[in-house]
Length: 113
Length: 113
Image 1 (cartoon, each protein chain N blue to C red):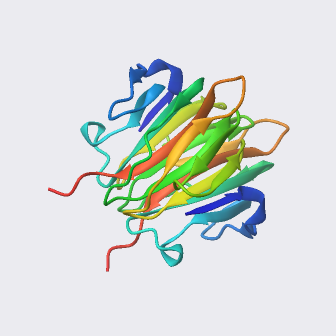
Image 2: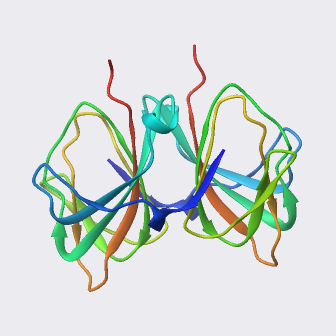
């Protein structure tokens, strides 16, 4: 069993077209997680993830801050205690729309071998 | 894409030996999640989950309240922003040790077919 505060895990710059977004990989395959990974994203007030899609789902829980999620057509506000579920191959983008850091958990399956 | 506040999902009594624990199934196979489920647990001040184990992992994030996690031998305090990862077949139990509801996310893989 592993128990730790998320801030003990190093925040790295998110890649792939994200702007002012950090990611902490909290639970990983290297730790022995058999199926899926838990990451925590921190999006600065002018930050956003890319509008993109991929063949795996996202299971997201909003922890702090304000933002919007868009599929490129419709933007929906998000706030703490909201759940966001994106299907495989669905377009999605997260943007901070507030003055504080937007923080959320985003869980994904491990890549298929 | 689905976006909703967790409180819009009905809280049900947790089964299997839990005491004063409610569970909300936030992201499920029925919603189209291919690999794993997101649940939110609410443990009342005198509540606890059973000391048990099973062949699947838990990926947990503490949202509110105070508690302890034990493997039956050692109890470790947990508080908001803590991550708990239990391996498959590892003994574990969550208990509220405070005066407020202990709330945490607990994600599990879908049962193997």
